[in-house]
Length: 82
Image 1 (cartoon, rainbow, N blue to C red):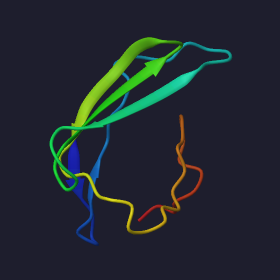
Image 2 (image 1 turned 60 degrees about the horizontal axis):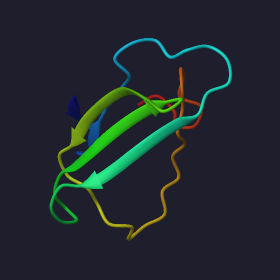
Image 3 (image 1 turned 90 degrees about the horizontal axis):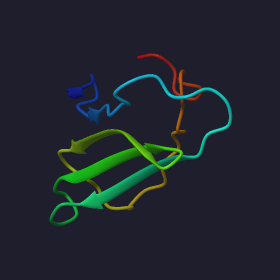
Image 4 (image 1 turned 60 degrees about the vertical axis):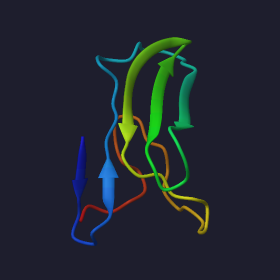
């Protein structure tokens, strides 16, 4: 699912198809460019080696800047609500 916020930044949300198991988990996020930087990127989510979700980011960016966001599970611990 993609949406544009008030700063015209495209945000894509990819989530698991169900609840994650409780306890200690190994979470993997695999990203693979479909074609070239600026194009689509396939995303695969795994928990303990098992596929739990997948999707596609419509536009991937190169690392021309430093990201300051965190990877959160169950809640957003870094960005304020906008």
